[in-house]
Length: 161
Image (cartoon, rainbow, N blue to C red; front, side, top):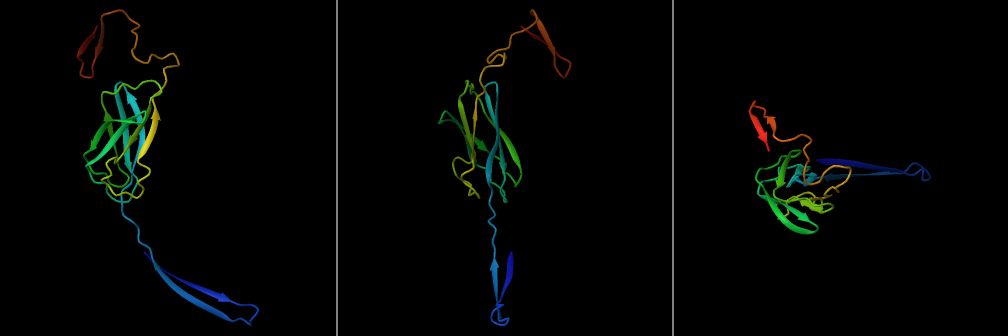
C-alpha cells in the first residue's frame, strides 16, 4: 500500500526550533506461489510426499517433483493440478523399496518452471527407518495356521494362503 510519514525534530537547546519533513513510500507485495514439501513417508514400495503452496498466489500445474535416494535422482512425478495459496496435494513414487537408512530427498518444482517467492525451500530430506524395535522390516509372519480369510468392507470373503 501507500504510506505517509512525518518526522518532526525539536531542539531543546536552541529555544524550541523545530523542523519537520514528510515522506511518502509505496510498498508493492510480490504475488508469487511458494512450494514446500511438508511430509515424506513410505508404505511398502511407495514413497509418499505432500506439497503445500505457502505463497500468496496460485502455483500453476506442470511442474515436476523429484525423488533423490542417497543424492541420486531416481524418479520424477508430474504435478498436474494448480495449487491455490494454502492448498496441499499428495503424490507418490512407486516401485521404490526403502532400504534401512537410505537418505531420501524430495524436491518440488525441480524443473524450475514456477517463479516462486523463495526458490531455496523446495526440498525436504528424510531417512528410511531402521529395522529395529522387534518389528519385521520386510514381511509379516502369520500367527495362525493356513488357510486364513478376511472379510472385506462389502462382506466378500477373501481366502489368504
